[in-house]
Image 1: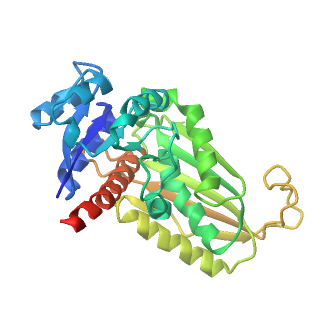
Image 2: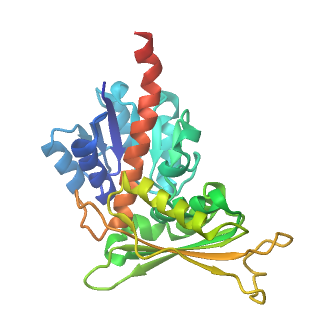
Amino acid sequence: MSTPVAIIGSGNIGSDLMIKVIRLSETLTMGAMVGIDPESDGLARARRLGVPATADGVDGLIALENFDEIGVVFDATSARAHVANAEKLAPYGKILVDLTPAAIGPFVVPAVNLDDHAGARNVNMVTCGGQATIPIVAAVAKVAPVRYGEIVASISSRSAGPGTRANIDEFTETTSAAIEQVGGAERGKAIIVLNPAEPPMIMRDTVLCLAGDADPGAIRASVEEMVDAVARYVPGYRLKQQVQITPVPPDEPLDTLVRAGTPRPMWKVQVFLEVEGAAHYLPAYAGNLDIMTSAALRTAEQLAARTTEPAEAAR
């Protein structure tokens, strides 16, 4: 049994997500595409594909004839808009998958903690940088205490639309918080770089962890296992080079990085990643957007499946 979904936000992210639902999902179907611009290319594309569409925002979604059938609503708008959208949809009991940095619901990174939020009704997909790097921090934290985790997400400026640019502060704050809450680092920091290079570069991410006592081989194996797990739903996700693990020099100053009173880190772990998009709708260099829509799709599929299991078991 398939679950109809709605997508709020008819821009690039929403359009890519729509194509992924149609082409890739065996358990979700498109129920509605929602926007606020009647001339939106995303709404026009949805109508050509036979998907119900409205330019009246969430109010228009609620007014659609098939609204009651929709089980999952993706929000691909902005952090501020999601607050209002979630409030309007709250009485209807839909599962909300939030692709903005609003962070109303719990952070979810599918390869790390999706099972911990099986019953959540509003989950947050952190950020593109968070989806790419938090699995690595979590992989290191699985075998060693991470005293400090820092990520740098470098994306093509061409793949940073108005929504991304308007939410830079939320990006850094949300990602930093999730590095700690989901990744398991005692302290987290996030940096985003918009690279204007031509031709456009694909997404590249650097992860730095200052870790406690552990076997370097175990750290490396944990990271490689996590990369494989993420690549199952983001095929373009890969290591750029071998994981780098070096001892932290005894005289290296760490006062600004490590919380006061914690044991001194033993290892400096550096992981270099790249994310190539699947080019379902967006160009291949927009891996930052592809990893968000891919992670959101995986999350919605699993949350919807768990919601329908009790009803199917009762039949």
